[in-house]
Length: 549
Image 1: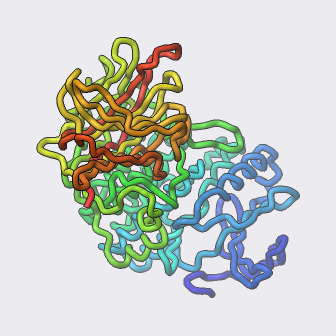
Image 2: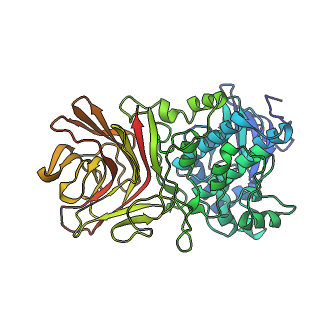
Image 3: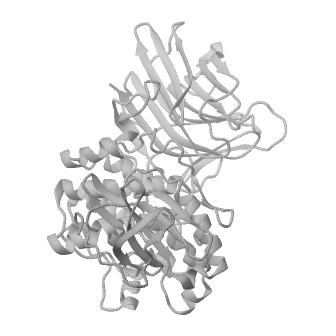
């Protein structure tokens, strides 16, 4: 026995050595193979999962397995057991991961009872951190459950991510009634036959947190068919779950995958930064999910039949985050907290307080566009779309904030150029006043192809003035969702203006020549160069206005 693991002795048929790894005991057996405790040449422990021979003999499985292992190797190590090595050719297939010396969440809860308080919050943050890293590498876990969450001395660690997907290629798996996943933690769309997506993992996160906090799965029944029916049609049983997590778990367990938050969104809310820009740990997160074995991509929101129903608007003033206690704070230093604490000195301001936030999940949050996107702007695709071109070269939308904004404000939003020519401009603005020809504002404009960035001053009747420009937008990811963050800060008799793209400082200047008075902030799309390519279509999401301390 080592730590909390019971190590079974090797059997006569078990291997004594695999490659560079000396096999010293059995850790367990699952649907795909046997897991062994191994010792490296350096004397360190590792976990080696050997694939069952009947699967290894299937050529389609081998090809998919190879692709999934290569994808899993790209996953950042935050709150996961990383892939260290693999044998992808020959008669014996195996994958080597870091050995996590601790019980599974399933073992812990069944032996010690449900988690409460900071211990439960610690777990929720850790698993959300792991999913953020997994999804950021283009991987879908597919079988997140309490048995695949190990409780190490430094916090929860998620294991076995992505590899289960290789079973999709085995024709006999579904024909014999074998589930690709664990029934009690399967999302309803998977039961209905849809493909797995990041949203499916978020549903499983909700089930895992509910199990950890109540001691039982949120959808339960005496038989597998009854469990599947409850998942598809019933309401989750969350009696006894801490109130601070209940609302987020309910959102994660939505029947409609389009209404579930992303893993990054879960993490942001749990850590009290609902629209924080993810640096270091998630700076490379993409909003498309590649499937290496087949070269396909999946959107971050799975398709639905017809428009997805929307909950009430979630525009927020003074959003109350889940409090992370001292035990969880240790995890944040190692994992989620890296997103803020390890940001370089050139990153966006870290000491901020949200005064208004909107994830555009509902149409009642007060923006002036339509509820279905018509007349150039409005709610659609889980975000807020603004079109520019034709007779409307520049279209802007002011955030529906009541009262006066702080003199030092950070405007943040995710934006995607859905269509249009490369010279179209995606933008946010601050200190906006007036309308039409007499409007004033500071505009932060980024070309849709990333080949330019401009900070401009709209001075009403005096017209626009370009304060600075660059021929390239540092940090911009062409064709993907990009996070724009603009800071407008009073600094004596000038206004300091800075723009970050995906956490990278892209432009900086100041205005001391009649600086604009305080005013509103919002979104903008601009297309005033003429030419071919059609109108610019910009989709915005996760808008945030914060005061800078």
